[in-house]
Image 1 (cartoon, one colour):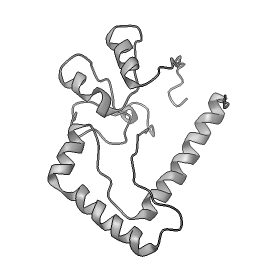
Image 2: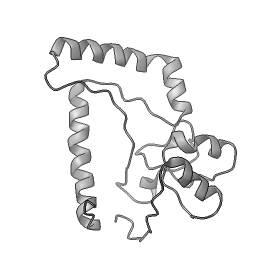
Image 3: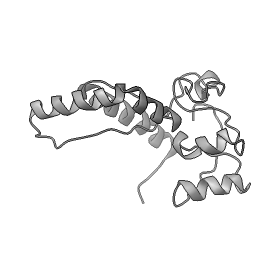
Length: 150
């Protein structure tokens, strides 16, 4: 949408079959998670053209972001930890502090970086804002592409 190009989406039943199709030359481009493809990139079996995150990857600093060619482009996979809506604030705060402490640990940070991940510690309110922002952004993409539920 932002680059004005038309790509054909080829659905696969998971990351492994999609990655195998790319490695076998059945498809020419693959938008996948860093954790799924990082080893193939490091081993030279795949050439990373760009990362979809807003910032360059610490693990692959030589690989540009798509945003460097298409200003404003950013697409990231985000993993978080949630709790039921009515969980007491004290419990949420305790979990948040302990999880942020783990994310600050150099060993945990290094392991996540090895998998192509970036640590985003912060308060629970940051996650709510991220979800709202992502919902708005991807809602526009869904409308533009005319995507309908099956």
